[in-house]
Image 1 (cartoon, rainbow, N blue to C red):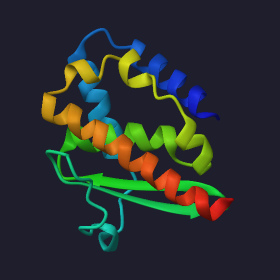
Image 2 (cartoon, rainbow, N blue to C red):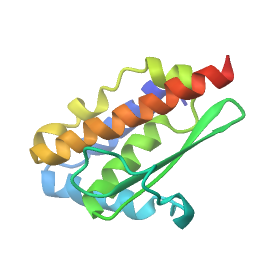
Image 3 (cartoon, helix red, strand yellow):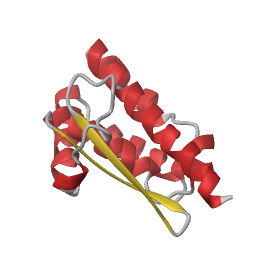
Length: 140
């Protein structure tokens, strides 16, 4: 599935909910389903700077595609990072670096986050894009 197709699927999922409380519950459930990151990857180097909560992001290049794992100490934030890595994981560095992320605005997520959480979301995306750029040199 392409990055665009995954985003379209997420938009369809969130369209099923009328109330934002239901959308928050869905985000929390996504966080609960996030595969557990290895404790050895919960390092200072893997902490995303700019997040109100502690968010760890690990990236590995496997067969030319980046596999992301993540965790957070806050349940909503864990759900948000789960959404973001769902979109980007298992794609090439080039696809990630060049992707247009539109699902966040389409589902109304950014406007329903506190300013500090919205800043954290931007930091998560920026970190993922930085991994993609760094891994591009290994793929080419």
